[in-house]
Amino acid sequence: MADLSSKKIAIISTDGFEDSELTSPKEAVEAAGATAHVIAPEAGEIEGKKGTKVSVDVTTSEANAADYDALILPGGTVNADAIRINADAVNLVKEIQGAGKPIGVICHGGWILTDADLIKGVKLTSVENVKTDLINAGANWVDEEVVVDSGFISSRTPDDLPAFNAALVEEFAK
Picture (tube, rainbow, N blue to C red):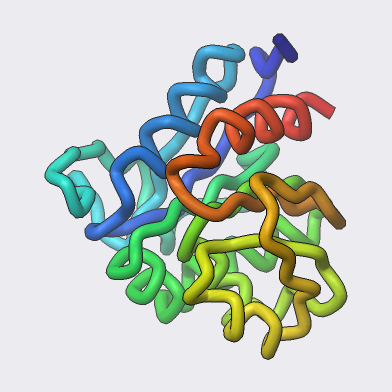
């Protein structure tokens, strides 16, 4: 397994996240030695759609892209729809991508990438009902378990988590 012991990973999310799409990648990067910080619009904790509660380490308004080596964007329809209109979250995603740092995105998590205008010409996958939004934002959408392209690691659904997590750890180690 790749060593992420010197890496600090940002996870941007809010209430309504798909529980396993936040917890499973977080556990995978931490198992590889990384430090993972959950970043949300408000301090305290956020709650997944199935009730998982996760502590917020830093708010989107306080987070600094320079502090992180990579980013994970979990899905969950409510989470993805809410976080994409948080200007601080969108700016953080832009700054992380602009610094050439890898971004992992699963399921509905790609919605924020459309608002950040970062995916023109990028090959991505997602859950089926985000496909049109990603294509309209310029992505080359494909239906594959995991796709790595232009610094983005993308997957479709919780069923893809084993492949997604393995690709995250591999790409984040580079």
